[in-house]
Image (tube, rainbow, N blue to C red):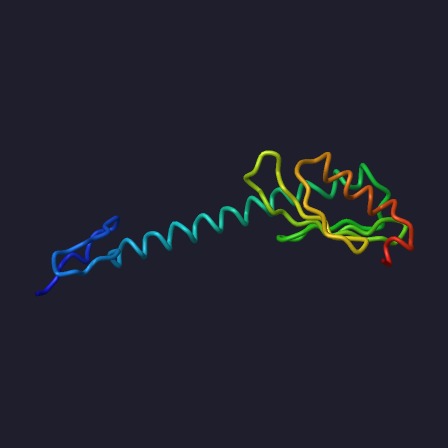
Length: 130
């Protein structure tokens, strides 16, 4: 028996012949939508990260702060450094991961982010090496 249920953009099909699945058009559409969403999410992450350097420079004494498409890298005046990545761009509050002074910390929102950065900025040299 020949099954001709393989067209249609939003179609999943199930046939008496035992064939079932998703049409090629539906698969292609789903992948296209996923690709668009991922590109939009990457853009939103990049935009969020771009807002952080100025805020960090106003809150801490830094040698350098630079934002890339995927993270923000901070070097404090005392030589300690931190890397900030976004883990939840659509969460409320936003979620970040902060790496520095030998630790990796998950934080939510600006106040937790500031506290994590403060902890790294104020860590003693011995703490940073452990």
